[in-house]
Length: 236
Image (cartoon, rainbow, N blue to C red; front, side, top):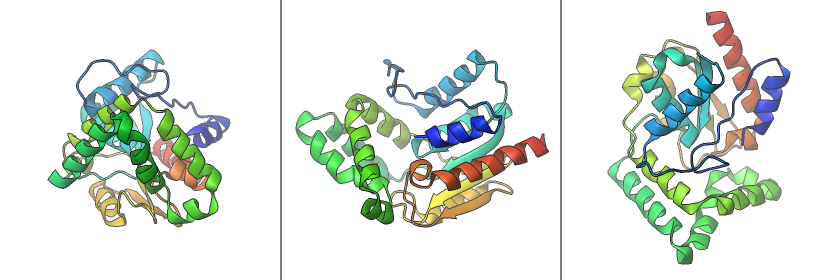
């Protein structure tokens, strides 16, 4: 998902880690109950293993929620913060119920295919869906390849996350919040509230972009991250 940004930032001389989240890629899910705190601590452990004390932390969608958990648990290790398609507010009761319904359905072999057919297109903006069928195919194939139990675990972890607004108000590092104009899962209003909680954060709205900005608008996302890293260097 972050391949374009990883390549560009590496070419610019930055060290970049793109973690495999537990349950995805090559990282086992394990037996721990669903929790974003565990995933945030996984990131801290990966930094330790690579000799990195502080870093610019960026995440999209669930990665954004992990980034906010990381800020809460490891604030001194955050040199800059980039949040993409993630709301700072906790889920409402209805949103939690929807995530639980998804988690239940995705592990049911008889319902999984229909659920992916219904939900995968929502990850992309309307312009992307109409004009980039190859990216639509890639997103659907990625969803189909995921371990359904990892998807269920992830949705339950997101549902349990606390409100992060007070945590973000204490952030004193460069920050950017990026919103897709056509994001059907996180509204502009929610993204604006997240940016407003971060002192001095830059709010970037990407036209014709949905929920997955790193692959829908790779150049714009790369530019936002490059600016963020530059600001972190100046602040340091």
